[in-house]
Amino acid sequence: MMYFDAMTQLGIGTFVSRITFGLQDGSATQVNPSVTVVMPTSSLHLLAREIVKALDNPEHRKRMRAAFDQYDADFPPLEA
Image (cartoon, rainbow, N blue to C red):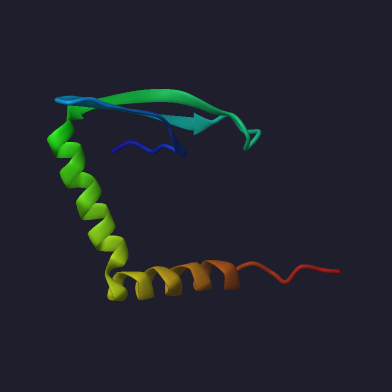
């Protein structure tokens, strides 16, 4: 398993596509490229469709909202 903070580049070709992922350098503004994944464009297209399908699922959105709400509730209130 690998962890990345962001996608830094995307190149979509007719047959092959490349996605470069990166890690933040600690400043929270700069993302340094770390790993490039090269895959068939048809597989990338299928992956994108599956991601959209999952994010459009109302039950999934409900679970994600609950997780975000819990995450937010775990922080102490901001002092004015």
